Image (cartoon, rainbow, N blue to C red; front, side, top):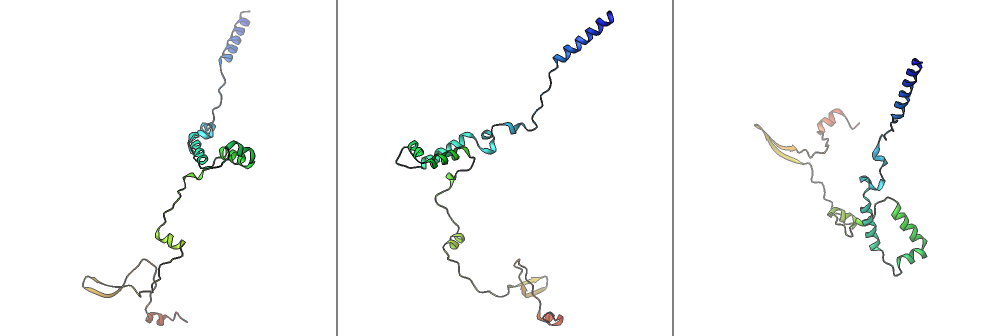
Length: 159
C-alpha cells in the first residue's frame, strides 16, 4: 500500500508540474514585417500622404460642390478611391519651370554651335635634359595611332 501511495503521489506531482508548464509560443522570424505598412518608414508615414492628397485637392477647381461632382461622374469617384488606396508618388513636387544648361537648351531649340575644322596635329616643343624636341606630339588622351610613312612603306601594310 505504501508503494502504491508513493507512486500515486509521484504521478500527481508530475501532473501538477505538467499543468504549470506553459507551452512556448513561436516568435516571428521577421517581426518588422508584421507592422502596419503605412507606418513603416520605407512606405512613408500616414500623415505625409494626407498632406500630399490635400495639396492635390487644392489644385482641383470645379464650379459644382465636390460631392455632387463625384455622384454625377463615377470616374471621379474611382479616381479619388484609387488615389487614396494605391501607394504611388504624387507629382505635386514637380516645379513649373525647369532651368536647362546651355547645351540642353541648344539641343531643344535646334541651335547647334558651329563646327570648327581640324587644327592639324597637336605638336609642342619640349626639352628633356640637353635634348630639345621642336615638334613633339602632344597626347590628348585619345588613342592616336601615327606611323611614319617610311615604316608603312617598309612593312607593306597597304597591300
